[in-house]
Length: 463
Ligand SMILES: Cc1cc2nc3c(=O)[nH]c(=O)nc-3n(C[C@H](O)[C@H](O)[C@H](O)COP(=O)(O)OP(=O)(O)OC[C@H]3O[C@@H](n4cnc5c(N)ncnc54)[C@H](O)[C@@H]3O)c2cc1C
Image (cartoon, rainbow, N blue to C red; front, side):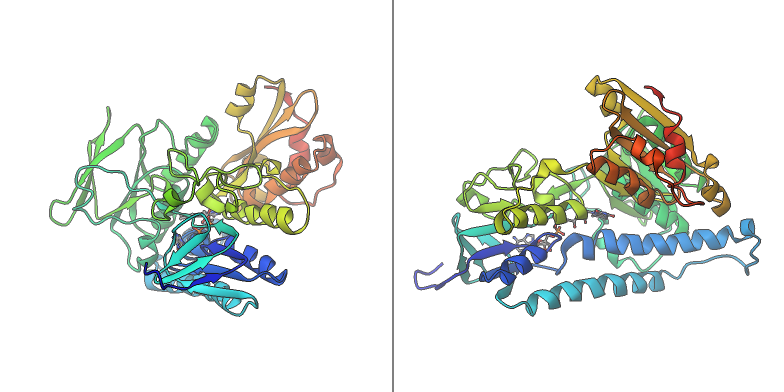
């Protein structure tokens, strides 16, 4: 950087336009501050371009295909074989995701007091950020750089064409056999949707069950749901190498049972996420990271360097769109509203968008047991939920844990039709810090999945 390069002064610099950056830029700019926001690739980041929005759009196409195949179950007569036009699936996805991207871009570019820079941002010091040939400085800098698919080092990985959640977005054809390394949230969503599009699908998971983070009964039920649709699930199989003999791709697994060579036409790596913090020049700032590259933050999302905050996936505190957006709310409330909001105010909540979906809040059963507290549990299969029966979607179950002394809800899982929505009545009561009896006295609408939550709570038993 030449000595003559001008440095432009701002009140705030935001790096990344994910789920926290743009809203924070708008709040800061609307409060009269001079703001710079920097994006090196696609406006809107992961959720909008390669994460939630496009995948859930594709999940919807896959659900449509599934329901057409099941039409006879409902007395509906359809034509011959169902086939999926992947070019149209992709076009629909591109249209919906593209609209979100251009809307974020347009919003930022027309925002008064805000300047948009397109390029890679790198810290030169704790208060100076370089973008190409430009230098920007501000007393407050907010990092919202997100993450990317982790690619483990293994023999052959450099020689074999593999897909990630990002390159999957370009797939406009039907893979003959999609081999997915990683049986967690991202892997499972792609597995079911491509099976429903018509691909043969194999999931390779090194652990003894799918989505290890969930309880065993949840993992087992999800495995059954996926296997019922013809997905091959290989557990206790650690992918240790990949190769490409002729027109196949082979994943080599360390396993005690089953074939150690799993061949397919395409390979998707879905083994976790890596924060985009390695090329930010953080070594010039005093911002500390943990072993995984997550930026260390306190309860207010302040990093170890004064004047620098980290929001979203790069701080390792959430990993979801709603947690990244909540990070924005926390920072804005503390800086602009004199409202002391904290990360620890947040209750764990997320969904897995296979069909039927899994809605999750609070602690798992394993976490409740580990906590050693006296707890109560109630469960209900979806076969005993009228709405699920009427819809012909009775897979799954729900369960809930309550503290035996305080009567507060500790956690819940709804794996079943509408589970991603119904879980919110539980979540809101948890936020209200109210006893579970509040839900029991509420009159829920019939027929819904939610109406059985009070009924289920009537069956609480010691855990
Ligand atoms: C396949 C998939 C499905 C998902 N589904 C869901 C879901 O259903 N629900 C849910 O809640 N979450 C889901 N997620 C997670 C969700 O997408 C992320 O948690 C969310 O996008 C939050 O990201 P973020 O705000 O931290 O940053 P991101 O959205 O990742 O954005 C970071 C931005 O920073 C930019 N950037 C990075 N480094 C620099 C730099 N040095 N200079 C300039 N710009 C930079 C990047 O280009 C990017 O645009 C999914 C993720 C994946 C991969």
